[in-house]
Amino acid sequence: MSADGPTMQRPAAQNWEEIPHVTQSMLLTVQLPRSEDEVLRKRNPSDDTITDFDTQWSRYTDNEGWYGSDELLEDILHPLLNADALAGQAILDIGSGTGRIVGMLLDAGAEHVYAIEPSEQAFQVLLRNIGKMERSEAVTAMHSTGEQFGLSRQVHVAVSIGVLHHIRDPLPVVRNAYAALKPGGHLFVWLYGYEGNEAYLRAISPIRRLTPKLPHALLRLFVEIGYWALVLYRAIDRVIRLPMHTYMEHVLWRLSPGKRRLVIYDQLNPAFSKYYKREEAIALLEEAGFRDVQAHHRHGYSWSVLGRKPSIAESNQSGGHCSNRPI
Ligand SMILES: C[S@@+](CC[C@H](N)C(=O)[O-])C[C@H]1O[C@@H](n2cnc3c(N)ncnc32)[C@H](O)[C@@H]1O
Image (cartoon, rainbow, N blue to C red):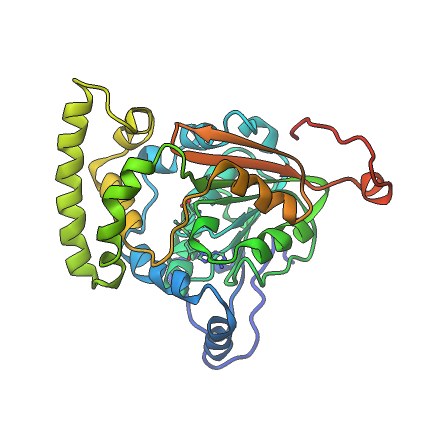
């Protein structure tokens, strides 16, 4: 490690990819050589989800505006976690995409952020975006999956925003997050909710049978149709209150038109999306050993879930009292 911060460890592999635009001396990256990357993908059960995001994140690369803002982080975490409590903490972000959550966590004062992203193309964009962040030396980016990554230290908080609902069997990821946390540390996840989305699911499910199979250009056509349908929906919603009103006003309509299109693309693109019922969301964390699991129905369409890894004392004595207080 240099005086300026961690330096990139680079094995002597011939096929190691060069990453332009990133101040590599300031950013510790752990990237697999090409051949190992292929092995990782073949072995991983969530392969299709990972490759689905290759195209998405090479087309939608920036995290500008409300979409990547501190305000949105507060909105996502509220009321289970306070963004102020993240200052000085070591934080793990599972499924970082292009790094919008990484940037938010740095802005919230995280001491260090470990960013896990398995998609090859997303990882390249992630590195470039981290390179542009003010405290990029405080980030370790790992090209790995949530099931397979390992850290050299335990962290205070782990987050996974909009990721687990795209993984067919997310329990190994949640177990790995548990292992990465210090005793007493917290896992926060955000998931699509079933409750509140019933009408939406009836409308979108037949369309989604086709859209994940489409090439990007055709999918963009569907996105454009969806975008103008959404504009019409919102116009009606402003006169007669329709389902999803809170989400439209508090989240979707605060995004730029470009980012609203990304949200639609993100709905139509992944081959697998699960809409969680409250008890399923809670059970996912409890099954991995988390305690005091709390769920919040965010804006009436999704679940934010927080769980706490027991302290060493709690682990040693069964039936001990568990604090319900977030970090
Ligand atoms: C909808 S994006 C969310 C990105 C980011 N968390 C955000 O909120 O902007 C889901 C991300 O999860 C990643 N992902 C898919 N399968 C994964 C797995 N098994 N482990 C970790 N990440 C995964 C995808 O590559 C993709 O970048």
